[in-house]
Image (tube, rainbow, N blue to C red; front, top):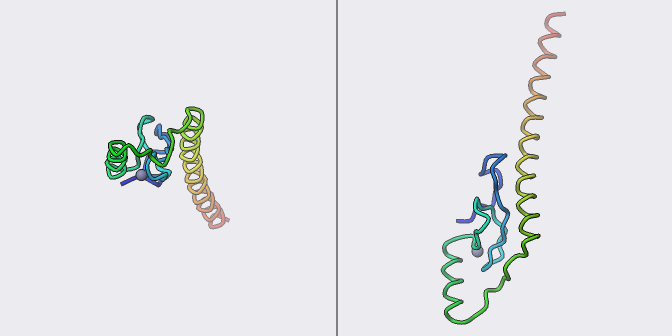
Length: 103
Ligand SMILES: [Zn+2]
């Protein structure tokens, strides 16, 4: 099954946002060389190769690939900061409550 959710990986994990060369699904992979979203698509693509049919999606350009993996990394960073911000807000409201009680 393709991993469609960036948060399935650690926020600082090296993750590559890839487009499946067979079905075009955008998914996350931990290998930069990943080509297909699932073993099902890999199987179909191999069949298509044998039948001399071109896969519906062309190999992604290197630059696009690099940008997509950067995007995937930044999404992880962003989620990390959102979580951190939530934790700080919770902490702040607790501190405020405590200082009100002390008055
Ligand atoms: Zn696929």
